[in-house]
Amino acid sequence: MLRSALLTLVLVASSCATAPQPVPKLPAEEVFGQPPPPPEPPSSMPAHLWAQQFPTPATCEAAARAMRADDAHAAWIRLKACVNRGGFNLLYDLAEYWADDLRNRPDAGSVLAQVLAARGARLDADLQFLQERRIPLFDLSAALKQPNAFKGRYLVVAARVGDVREEHGRTEMVLSEVTAQTDTQHVWVGPRAATQTSSSNRGDGAWGFPGTHGPMFPSSGRGTLDSRGMGQSGYIETRAVDSFADTGKELVLRLTKSDPFLGSDRPFVFLVRFDGTRVSDDAQTDDAAGDQLRTPVVTLISYHDLNSQYAF
Image (cartoon, rainbow, N blue to C red):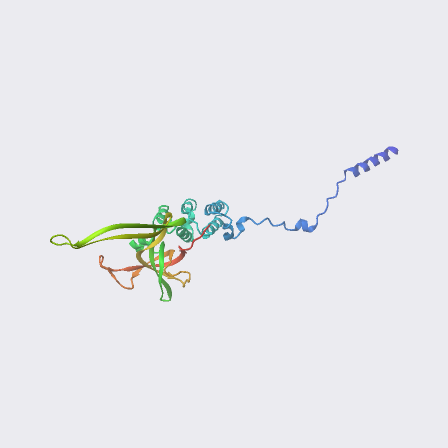
């Protein structure tokens, strides 16, 4: 009897020692609630604000390029923001790292036109560089040599705005093509000092009219000549100054509507679609070929002001 009671007591004690502890209950909002949102990544920042973080065009372009592996479209949007800040002239970097985008994206032409404007509209060399890499941007001269082959192609033209007129319910502008050139200019650099000079000369002289036996009415005199001058001294520096000269070619630009920012007689870089040629309004005749002169007609895609100065 005593042994049976001791065994029962041991079993009860063992059972109490091994019983599992109850699991604490969590509030329902902690179990089923949404986790807090993660910090906003830099890529979600508006592109124009994102581009303002970088001190130079090179650092901005490199940061955009680094995003391509994760999101190629977002990287392109940020590259455009780098270019839109102005002063972006890294044409060679674009051709090396973004060549596929420049060949295939529909807005690549406007991006390149803005870069060419930032480079001073040196279009002959820059367009040749792009064409060697099969990037399809061309100049006006090439289109005029083969109008049918270039119809529908994009051209980059540096030009001044001339007359504006309405034709068949459409706004048209006459553009005068210009080409970039470099002139030299001499300018004072640093402080200038005023200088004054003076001199005095004395002399004797004799004169008379020639005669048979010597001078007639001989005379003589003595005089003094005083002179004074003012001048400046300092350092003069020779600088290269960019300017634009007319090529003599005109073209008709078609717009969907008037644009007040296209100021008259100001140089712009235009990205245009070549639509062909038409007989000039004055119907002049090319004496060499015996044909009527034709004017190129283009449609505006984008334009970029050459007078605007931007600092990155």
